[in-house]
Length: 198
Image 1 (cartoon, rainbow, N blue to C red):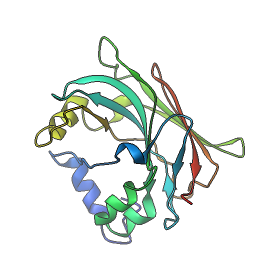
Image 2 (cartoon, one colour; image 1 turned 90 degrees about the horizontal axis):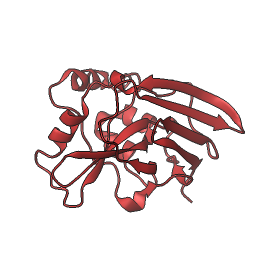
Image 3 (tube, helix red, strand yellow; image 1 turned 45 degrees about the horizontal axis):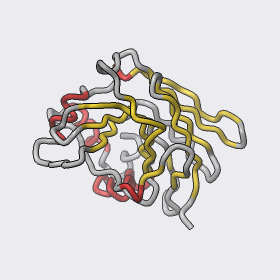
Image 4 (cartoon, one colour; image 1 turned 180 degrees about the vertical axis):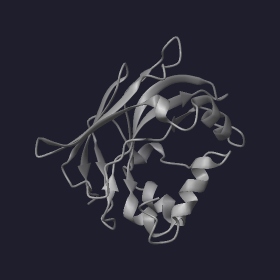
């Protein structure tokens, strides 16, 4: 809401949060996705760039949740703030997502007390450090999966990032060579370095 206030689009996010239908959007094909230890990009035409740490669901072709991993949903907030219709440009670009470090396939769903932790390091110093339990998410995992599979087929299954409650405030923007570390026990830690597409 803060990033869209100037454009008059702030109320759109409030309406989405309270709506019956969740906000779902396509993020990245495989070639635009990085793995653990690889670089993720910030856009050169954006002045406010942040990582978004997210518990990520893996679902099979019928939409059943089979496992979990960690996602980094990179976001160009200055672009999204200009106009909510610019969301695809703010979210979908080269190396705009990271997934890893593994796929956890547990016998039971992760408990609501499971915590997502994110640290951002710059020149070896921690510039951001916060954590939140997944119970803070507005939408349940089965609800999100159900909406995604209503009108879409995924013959090989798919990954769904579930959203975030951890975002640095407006005074912080990522810089080249920053390191983003996202941890979710018992999955592990996803580590990515920030780069700019050459």
